[in-house]
Length: 325
Image 1: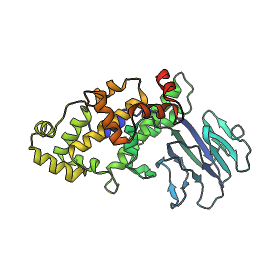
Image 2: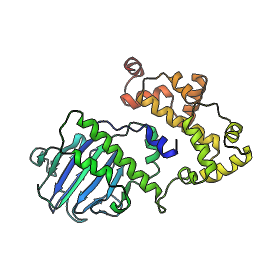
Image 3: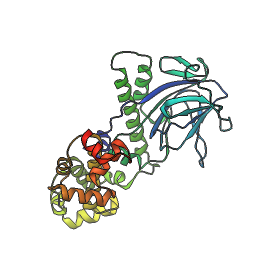
Image 4: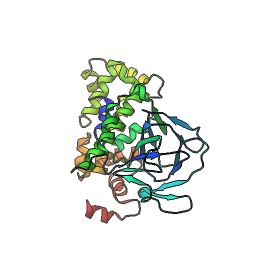
């Protein structure tokens, strides 16, 4: 499995908030929902994304934007339109003076806006990311990623648009998966652009030797890999693998492997009920002590504490976490 596939394989968004917005100028909406990731798909018209201390970003028909981080941002018809609406946690929408407008601006099934025939229409999907694996991928991209419509596959966004008007059993799950698909396809396109600031591990896949070594580590993190074992598996000497891997990826093979194992382990701790011992074995550690030591060294927290904080927040007692898990 290639690096991109492995990084996205465990990403399964659940409970994504999806909405079609139809707006007529002037309009400006401040997004303060605290979501980890937002996706915007421009269907018609134009919009501007404004973030503090960053120049406005123009979105045209067909463009897809991925906005990461919990910092607020503004969507508007122009860079100078004052904010009139604010979207807070739980997708509660109000005017700037506090009036609730969730109902008054409803335009039908999953559709919202200030005009049913407005010249600007876009799809939004916002959700928390469940795993460290996808987080590692998103760490490598800017806070705002825009892929122009001419560069991307229009299929995923078109499917998402078509599903907005349906109200069939299981529709929420279908929409979750389609939002995932839009995210995956957008990031894949962005990483493939020659001008993107893709991380070293992504660019290193252009080298067949390093691609094969990365694939082995990603596919089999539980293997008792040594530098010699990896080198033999890709048919080169230890010195050749160590030198080329470090030059292209930016760190030695075994260091990368340890970080990848901890990334996978963190995802399993947060999203499964597997025991710490079982997770340790899955990522290549024969004993819980060895796994816990490595995990603490990389993430500066014990595996059990990491699981408790991800599931219950930093203030929940460990005993509660153990009973619940």
